[in-house]
Length: 112
Image: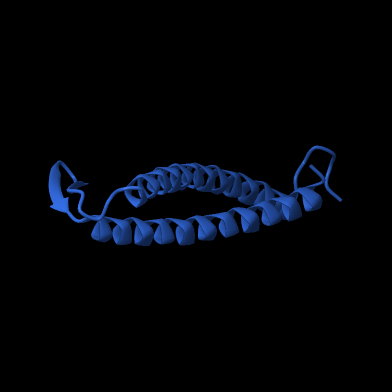
């Protein structure tokens, strides 16, 4: 039996894994925030474009360059972008949930 205050090698591994998971969780949560902002921006842009008349001249930026486009092309592009964002956001949220479950298991083993 180990003395009070001394961790077993297994507990030390759990503690190390706990801190690694916490760092991963922080990173994933930051990514989730970024994708939520992107989703919000894309949704707002799509709402604005939806209100435009089909004959309206519209410009879309690609890096520092503006390109003239038609409303329908921009709608399609924004819709596809929004779908990609939502898929990635869903994936990040699943990873967050898995990490939280792993952290909970480690906490129970260590009685934190």
